[in-house]
Image (cartoon, rainbow, N blue to C red; front, side, top):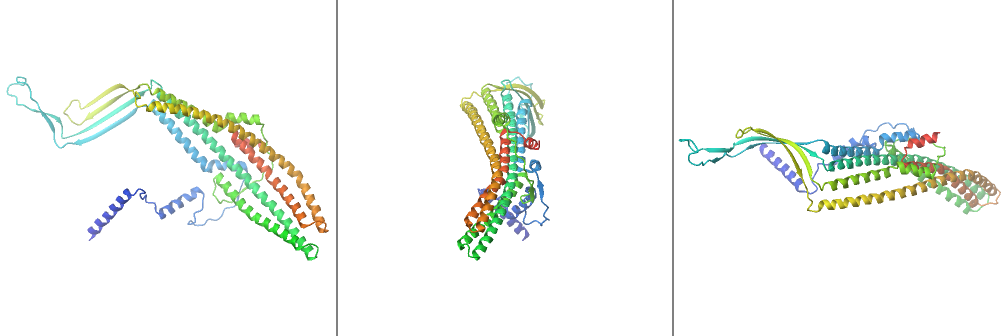
Length: 485
């Protein structure tokens, strides 16, 4: 009975395996339990909450200034980590190309073979060749079993320079990957900076909304008191009440925005998604460069531009290698052959050789690849021109936007005092019956608008300054150092 069950289980397992082989989607062994196990193992590294894990005490809030946030991102930002790995891949490819040029290729093959019989051949010699009385004999051609070992060392002779051009192309690809890594680091530093100032803006806007709600509540109380005294209509009270409710709803929406900016900031610096982080306020005005200085720095250091230049060198080298492949490829090396059979002596023999391989290209494939490579070179030149134009346009637009935000900051600073005085006058007129609730609400709305501009203009200008830093390709630490001077 046990043998029957074992055979049945083996048959069922074999049927399952065969079914998984024939099914195009396969199986993979990925069950819901295994997925849950994999997510639970990955969650601490990813910095996300695992609902099935034991709850841990919530840590206290961590306060970051911009320098600390950028430093945290260098170790925890996932796109930066991924780009560093891509640079390692490009480095390995450059070393692979170097190995083709400098080091020999060594291959070995071994085999032990059993034959069904010994192979022989009958020797039929002319009369008189063998001594008298010698019987005819057979010659053994192969044993019934024998082992062989063959080893070969081949070193390419790069007479035409094809391999040197392939190495130059791989090295240019490595430098391009390094430039791409710097571009991603600048992009993520900008993401950190933007999330930092977005948090400050969202927090200040919520404070402005709280101040506005306090004004609306005061106005509602005044309107209700005047309505009870028969001095205003019910419509004026209802108008203030609607405006107050809308402001309270806006505050709830801004609470969500504050949380979103916190999550975005945590994602950018690489800490846990829901970590209780805080950011330090910034009141310094950014120092804006001139357009000529910014263009000079960008044309010299912009990493996207650098990557395109390196890609141009890579394409040029690949094109040169393809053109050189029209000529013969030379190689030299040595070989060793060994057999356990004693039919031939010696059973181990070495050899050396010099040879060449020449692809005459009669299938036209190489010429088509060369034509495509030439087009790729021209296409990259067009991309370089396009990038130069886009870079200048972005710098000019970003610089002008930063200047406008700083001008708006100055305007709002002066306008707030006037808006506060306007509101005070409207409230006094309302209290003596010479103004309506709508007039007071308009004055409060004007004050709120100016406070909102004042709350966000500086942070917007700081963000634009960070965008200029990314476009010029300069480290963000230099921007922070300049701001402290």
